[in-house]
Length: 234
Ligand SMILES: Nc1nc2c(ncn2[C@@H]2O[C@H](COP(=O)(O)OP(=O)(O)O)[C@@H](O)[C@H]2O)c(=O)[nH]1
Ligand SMILES: [Mg+2]
Image 1 (spheres, rainbow, N blue to C red):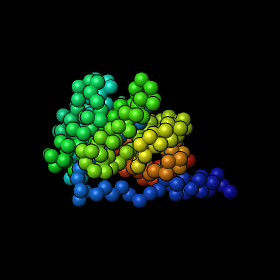
Image 2 (tube, rainbow, N blue to C red):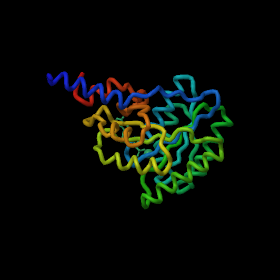
Image 3 (cartoon, helix red, strand yellow):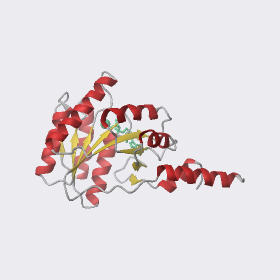
Image 4 (spheres, rainbow, N blue to C red):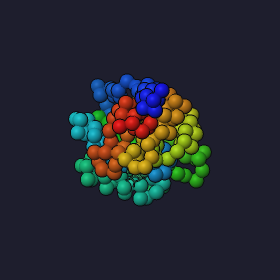
């Protein structure tokens, strides 16, 4: 078989593995609550902001929840985005209970008629066990503010990193039950190949990809284009 032919076959296999029905949130029952989680630097905060911009442009106003209270800079980073985008944000003082911030954000989102509440979370704590326990609590408490929340629990993965993120994904999946992935930094060196392994390991779809640092640099997954770029086609 020609090399090109083999690459075409590989791309088709990857495309099938990555393809999934499109994301169709239930906008008849709002706010839809989306938790973004993942390790430090993956792109959670940036993705929350980009997603708020995208949903707002599609007619679904969002409210941001700054649940990363571990670092003071994290809340400030989200607030800067929020004011730039003109999107409301609910946060807490540094060291505040992230679950309490999530509760407040979901409650505020419902009261203000937001269609989506996007919860940014911390990526590093004293220990991994502590981080996972905090995320579990956040999920539990968000569900008290609104039944079924957070409706989506998306793992944000740095696409420029290698396959050790598959193990990370498994741990997060066990802790909170992921419903989707966002693969960031596909504008950089990496091609985001780990996403295929993560999607396979967890069975959850890639929902969006990050292709830059600006508000508009978040795109729904195009499985065909993604698969072809993974094998070096196009
Ligand atoms: N080039 C590029 N940079 C990104 C992308 N997403 C996030 N970043 C950058 O990655 C860094 C870490 O992002 P941040 O959202 O703070 O990560 P967090 O720690 O998971 O909240 C920041 O400098 C972002 O601007 C992307 O899709 N492309
Ligand atoms: Mg952050």
